[in-house]
Amino acid sequence: MIKISIVDDEALFLEGINLLFSIVENIRVVSSTTSAMEMIDKLSNISKVNFPDIILVDILMKPVDGFELVERLKKKYPDLKIIILSSHYKQNVLGHMFKLGISAFIPKNANKELLVNTIESVYKTGVCFTKKDHEMLIEFMNSKIKKPTLTNTEELSEREKEVLKLICLGHTNKKIADKLFLSKRTIESHRQRIMQKTGVKNTVGLVIYAIANHIYKLPIHYYTV
Image 1 (tube, rainbow, N blue to C red):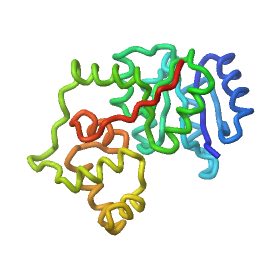
Image 2 (cartoon, rainbow, N blue to C red):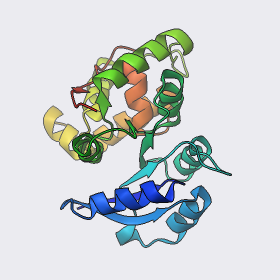
Image 3 (cartoon, rainbow, N blue to C red):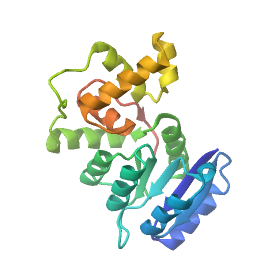
Image 4 (cartoon, one colour):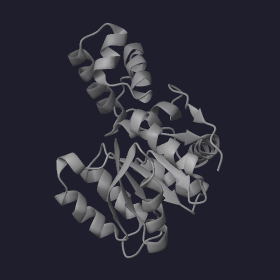
């Protein structure tokens, strides 16, 4: 069962989304609210068993908008998966949100299949991109973001690149260890060194770093809107 929370200041839209998920067997809404601050409070007080795997966030909200909410959530819960569900599906918005560490961006006019498939994909692999996302994100990175540089002069080793590719595929440390015939502790050490060298703080950041440095090519999901 995938546990999700939703924050959107349009009460009617929020009610509709809750109704939609009430008939989806493998997704359960554990909390929903029209206020970003209320969502922050809910997460601070929610039990571990009901803590969401994924949060769906709108962008245009007051007084705290989606940009600020995502930034706050990623600071407090760096591994929390966040999906943006917004009508403001533009290159600069998409690019900025991915820099903040979101896992996916869904237009509000998306159909049920895209919404459910994106949630399932993010739950399994950590990120989900459509073909359009991929094109917009690559163009944004090429035009507005300088290629990320390592925090020191040491480059990633071939083994670290191999581990990074498997991290991008959503594999756990244990699964990577099994694939590479190494111990879990060794993989944990590789992951830590990769994060130190790249200067990123979470898995989404590693994925974006790997894409920008041509270490990993995005799997593109050909869902229709």
